[in-house]
Image 1 (cartoon, helix red, strand yellow):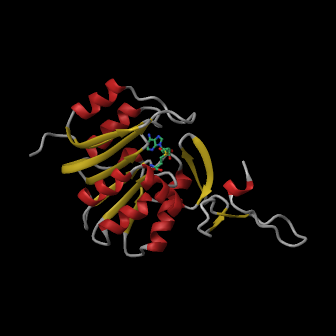
Image 2 (cartoon, rainbow, N blue to C red):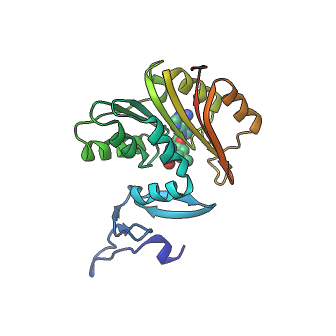
Image 3 (tube, rainbow, N blue to C red):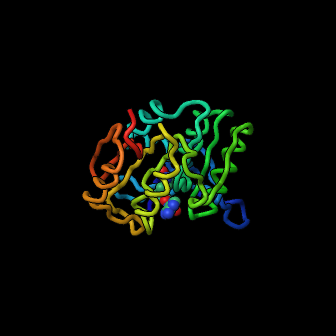
Length: 223
Ligand SMILES: C[S@@+](CC[C@H](N)C(=O)[O-])C[C@H]1O[C@@H](n2cnc3c(N)ncnc32)[C@H](O)[C@@H]1O
């Protein structure tokens, strides 16, 4: 990887190599080791973004996310960022639901959940933010589940989909997005499986782009 695509690496005079990197997107943000977000852009690995730049890259790639949040995430909502990873979308969700709402974060990678919880507590100290086990989210408790590139990374996507479906309260919706495998951690989701999931409830909106499908979906037929 070229130096420019990875950001500059600092070196203290005469001492050991300083362990800081600058965000590869050039925003000037200094990344501490472990806080960088690794992104895959158009199948190419682009490393060491800060979470804000990763979000804006994601947004350019997926403008429907912003439209979906505008439409469905309201102050006071309970939102669940399923498989949050080190994405900064959790911060965006938290800003939108505000102190009257709450944010649940789950991911098998506990360090990613901790990273996001700490980040949210620091930015929004009055918010209710909880790191949770995916299996422990109560039934009919969530207004908005954000499931961005997670079903295609889960070992048991069918079971995860059922949990998400159960977690939604009447009127609640899930933003579901899957991507075509472009790294070993992404598994193919067949068109038939995707249609089966969507067919088990009501599709509020859906779309696709190269290698990506998304839908805003609710589990029961609601008027
Ligand atoms: C491609 S990353 C997407 C991260 C984040 N949602 C985003 O928008 O950048 C996939 C994430 O799904 C998580 N994951 C895998 N299996 C999961 C499961 N069964 N439940 C919840 N998260 C899961 C992974 O640990 C990883 O952080």
